[in-house]
Image (cartoon, rainbow, N blue to C red; front, top):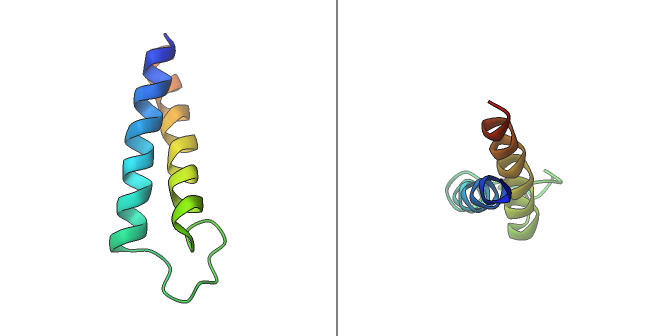
Length: 57
């Protein structure tokens, strides 16, 4: 049960890192994706929420 949240958060963290690395916010004006930590944290939250949706099915 909680494993799906953890796996979702790990996948989301990886997606957040990849988004920061390859797309990112060049100007620094994007509050969520302008720093590495913000992007990874945002990805973790979205990933765990999506993991919870998979669990609900």
